View 1 (cartoon, protein in one colour):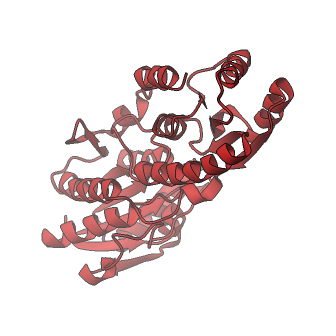
View 2 (cartoon, protein in one colour):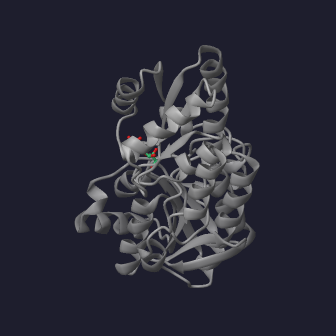
Length: 319
Ligand code: F6P
């Protein structure tokens, strides 16, 4: 391979820039030319492609978002869109592509590989909902942002003796809520992977109140439903003063944590090596602190294992 390209696609995640940097620098280290595709798959279809040099990725390792910009692109989900993308890659004489993004973006890399264009996927999403890696790039930073916010909300919850419902992102996955709930000692964690009876949540709040607890924090994953609806039901059922905070997009931004920068650097470099070794149609990941590259179909097909041990522990510790 003489020329490769890199793009970021789907929801941005802190650490994407560190991954881009690693791809560019590792490729140049191997004397391979690197091109950046701007605006994700849409930019690929439109031919929004430019060469990157060592300096193109200077001073970005600590920045959130993605310097290559990102987009969700419906056209690329069609065969026609994918052929247009391949035509653009060939027009620039590019031999391989690295895609940084969530499961939908990585599935796109698989579809291009099936059309005989070699690709590698790097998992990057705050949701941590991809099975072929222990952690996705961006999860740790989003988690720390959530913790910081909850710590602040807790001050008010304590001062005003209120119950707070905090809705966090995660799409259909509950990892952000589960980890944040355990890290912050939440009274209840509501996630899509486990349906807790409403009466049990109420019972728990009441028992806590009887023991002298004057405030409570409930973390709700967005995949379960609306925090505002839930808050209303809680207030009606308990008569406790209840407030709702939807954390929203502050969870996606910000400077990546050290863990995300290191993960992104390792996965970016591994992606380049995998592409150059001819291991195409793979997704790189980190499992038990070992770099892996599973076939994308395998990496995405396995169900994410719900961490029962962590969920049970959160219950045991927040009695
Ligand atoms: O996948 C990341 C994520 O932030 C999810 O947690 C959330 O459900 C979704 O993206 C929101 O997507 P968009 O910004 O396209 O509305």
